[in-house]
Image 1 (cartoon, rainbow, N blue to C red):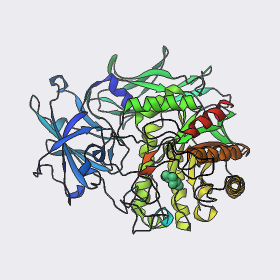
Image 2 (cartoon, protein in one colour):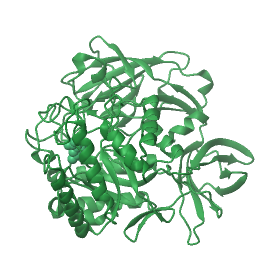
Image 3 (tube, rainbow, N blue to C red):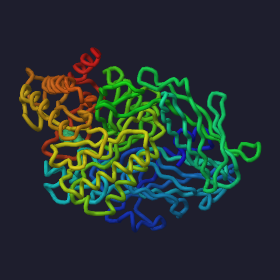
Length: 578
Ligand code: BDP
């Protein structure tokens, strides 16, 4: 699939805006027929979450259809025409004039298909996207099997999802129609391995569709490399960078170049390529960026905002990076799903380090028994890596959040996920994010980095600041001696209702949250094997309803609308000391 940035360099039409929307209660995506008539439609913004746009849809979880009419520029007649959806939650099928051209089972990941065979030139064309947001115990991520199950039976919620964020349905990322020459570049995957003498190589794997080109060429800073296109449509281009300007948070230098397809002397297609030269690896118990140990300071986040829900909003992304810069963070985790491509583009430009996470959250033993779940989990992981591997900001792949792995079979499931990630991308370490202890995290030894989520002072040692510090210290040491890997404290914190104050030990007060975060951060910083701390969460976020949530999860150090709580000022002070 062509990288989103490349659209700027080919003919494209954005199909965001108001679509006709119809809920189809009781129907399933598997039986959907685009020609069947449905009830009266109402306007729905794309990108957007339906639950945020209409009060009566707040708790609608099921099948819906989005329709709109579009015209295709006549000049595209001899071209290959694609329709691309950045992401829809949770599963979707796309039809052009009744022909299904693409589908996606997994939310938060793009999908596209060629559609020139379905287009009516010079006439109106109907595009229909059927989107389903199931509350289904076997979806990924899943709902609970029964009330009381999931998240280790921790609590019940409505809807009964096995994860702690609101199951927003909708077309959440841009819909784009674009055209390429019939013979074109499908994808350029870059890897930037380091040689023994610390010089970099750029290895660009070019996938070609169509048979009207014989050579692929890479042009960067006036230098070129070229190679014949092999049977099967692939070419590998290599260029050495002995004097590389390395990408790092203080100097996030991006190289830009171009890949061209040639037939004889004429250029058949061209595609930009952007990359950063940096190395990331785990050695001597440390996470090394360009050979030097790096400490991560930052957050687990969510894609979540009032009215917008889970949809892409570029001003919100820019604002969040500005707030992260202000507070002194240098990194974040895309908890608990792959974020918009635009977010990673900005992280590349601004020099943030990203833990890229899949949507595999809420996994427990029942999943490890079913081969189709392993197949789907690997597919999600591979699709994320394929989409994001060109981003220098992404330093590790987190395969899942807080699975409950007690059996040999579960350990095998995670071994396979680790292998899948390493096969898809041998250049980055692979992370496992644990909660609990060694008994429910079998298989974590297959990973290079371990994230641990622990809420001392909140879910454990409630209200006891001092004990919570000792408890964290002991816990980190135990986990480290069990796994022998560098550890990221990937979640810790406490809920605080903005505006609620106290003397420091009142639950839900801003003071208590600030104190917990400060104490726990300081404990983690004393551990040589801890490679960083990610506070949970950057901002308050919407969840399913539950007795443990005052309308939402309030562990943000910013409110949902991005005002700082006391903890934000505390972190700003602490991180400015670094
Ligand atoms: C962690 C989960 C996260 C929750 C958090 C919490 O990974 O998704 O939001 O707990 O309870 O265990 O706030």
